[in-house]
Image (cartoon, rainbow, N blue to C red):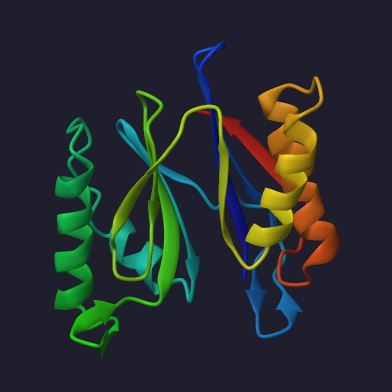
Length: 178
């Protein structure tokens, strides 16, 4: 599994993206340190789950709405591509793509995307996370935000907590400014 996080620091006008650096196949930790984040134009995205969702989106780079501010246009393209590839299963009348992710626009808007590809905006100056280490990262963020720690360091420490406490989040923190 994984831990992916995003944090919009409005005072500094920066958005921080973070993830653990390694992946898993079964219980085997893969070699190499790689960010879970991909950037297409004005959008950054990262998904947790079985990995197929990210592979499908990477195949959309040529048609991805890189400069469109409309998150729903981005999600509609992703939904169509996943359906075309027959990824997901029907769950109570809605498709469940068995993933969870974050979409971040260069303007600083952060969106949580659930398995049904429902979009939920995240408040500015709030760390948000997805993946198996989500609860650890959010708990650490809650405890650290009350202290005088920079948003970047809150993000880094939150990812470190997920790595330390969730065996599904191997590696080291990767922090990127977007």
